Image (cartoon, rainbow, N blue to C red; front, side, top):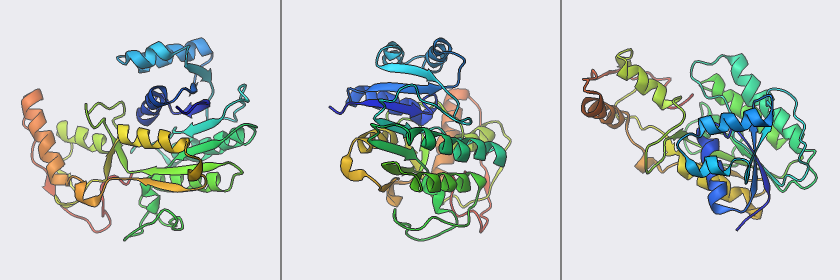
Length: 294
């Protein structure tokens, strides 16, 4: 099994939590988890609260999982110079967030993590989790080696593209992983984050969204969090992956349509919440070619 000392950012989020679980299950690594806290004791307490319900993760805290304090929006200094791998998952994906908030975490935060990593003498791999939506307004087949887009549908997309530029311009032995819109576990459906498509579904359940600006046959570019975590973890330890970019997306033929997703939610609401969610009106708009652009 692969081993080393791995620093994970964003380990309190949806993907980061799954990455830590994968590292525990498939490697012998010591896992350093960066947490915003005043002390390591406070950081450990925060992890226990956020990981509540997952005994494997909680029991690993203080053993193979070692909380360390830090805030990526500020310059970082590592007290662990023997770190061998960094997996940078931390990101702001909120639909309602301002440009300042997005840049503060996604761009400046990545710059701070990169600068810290460049000082690590034993670093073997820096894995940056980007997004497939750095393709921006481009259409057609977008290859991993294609130039980054210059026009985007959202500030989130642009912030992730800017972060990619920072990683590529560094001296790090990096890889870049570009997942689609990350949703819950493929086996249990469990999620720890209700941004992206969940935000839209929540508005529907609250009867605050009656019109969807897309066709009912438009596909939704979703990918389960456990699949993304498995691939991010595996690729982090593959030497031949150095300097490469990987799209972690599902085949177009396997993506659900908007109408299918909406009907599944309406059925679930009737069966579990005993409420009848109104069927939305689909009003396609030319500029919105796909769901999940934020």
